[in-house]
Amino acid sequence: MDKDIYGKIKSFFAQLKALVLLFLLLSGCAKNTHPKPSDLPEVNLRFIRFEQLFFGKENIPLQHLKKTYPYFFPEATPDSIWHNKRKDSLQLALFQATQTLKSDDLRQRITAVLQHVKFYFPETPMPKKAITLLTDVDYSLRAVDADSLLLLSIDTYLGSTHQLYEGIPLYIKQTLQSAYIESELVDALAPRFVPKSPGRSFLAQMIAHGKRLLLHDYFLPHLAQKNHLQYTTEQWDWAMAHEEEVWDYFIANELLFSTSDKLIFRFLTPAPYSKFYTYLDVGSPGRIGQWIGYRIVHAYQKRTGASLHEVLEADAQEILKKSRYNP
Image (cartoon, rainbow, N blue to C red; front, top):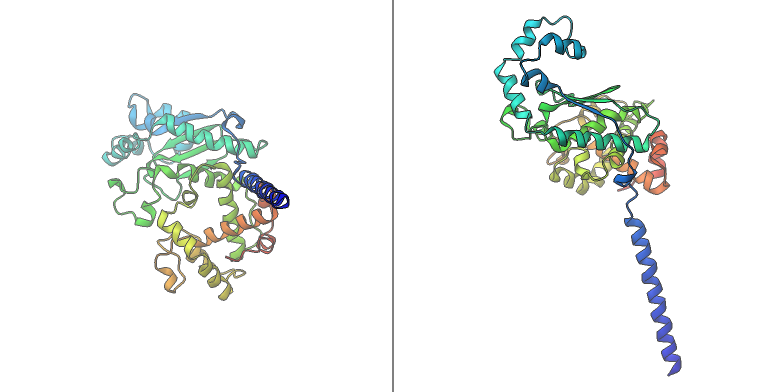
């Protein structure tokens, strides 16, 4: 009987030890490795709402604006164009619509991005000014890194259902939301940190996009993953559900080392859907090649334990090989 009791006690402590080890393992996995707000460095950023200066305060002379912000006023453009623009009804409607985006919130969000950038890349000079302006809804350049300046096309963040976006294709309209301001800023800054790929292969381009999207994980740690790619929930879910089929298609059709420019159009650039020319087209989001690139890079980092800087410097073929990516 004593042996039975001893055996039960021994078994109990063995199970307890296993539970403790499991708890520690799970705690370690769940531990947030991102910097705390108190760890983030200070960033001195001057924030300017240029559209307010241009449209909101008519008492500011045009010549004063041209002298202060010469980069917004090409010399070949006559002053009459700018005077007419300040009175144009459509321009004024765009201006009024953008004023729902509050300056304090914008400044805080831009600053938070730059703080995370500086945390991981302390030696890299940061932009000193962030300027919002109207660009006639130029959604091809929603955020621009101009060395010491960050430019934000404020009229491209009014919401996908805004009436001023009537006529814009749906797949583009769905990205014209303020929720994507941070992701656009990171994409604008990414060329500072992602080395230009020496190769032209489809794989090299996918991995380059994957590295860019990995920056989002570090610079925007609290942003939902789908927002990095500006996917809807449905688009993200489709990508997750069809990851194996997409990869099998790329392998079966020997696309990885192809240098065909058509693959950029089919799988990497913004589009209403990715172009497999099969049943996969239905329901697929555009830019699925970018998403696959991110998944490969993520698998590589998880398997090798490489730091952010090491991932950014790694060769595309090395990343694919060591990632053992096989969804």
